[in-house]
Length: 158
Image (cartoon, rainbow, N blue to C red; front, top):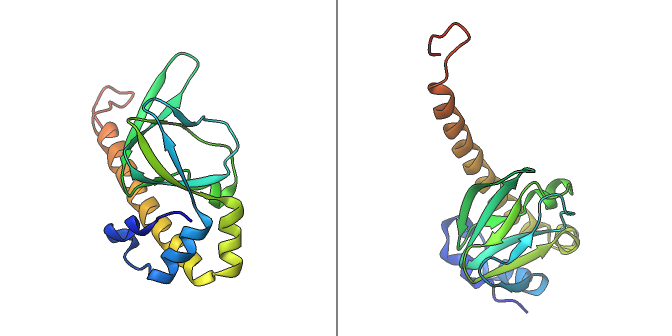
């Protein structure tokens, strides 16, 4: 049994009732990673969502010549969620930025959650959608600020 009561400390999980937490504690797994330990690599099969219990993780996008830091995530945030939605390979590499504890929800157990406890699954989906919406808004804002200073082909600023 995994302790996931820490989720209730974060506003995004406030819709969860004690019975939801009890259900999640039975199907989630707690994992520990040392600083600089790879949690998963870009391109590997996506098979789980991870919620940070303690610590920090760094998300990188890799090319043949370099590794670009995309974001840093901390306690209460999650990563790997796209694996639960579309089952595609990992789109980035995630590394522990410091000694960290995460809670893993595998796609196998997530499917079991959807079938056996649909109300709890809907709450998990709600939290996923809220976080993903926030991330899309943040990315859009960042893209807009990058485009703001670009010049057009005529040499004038857009």
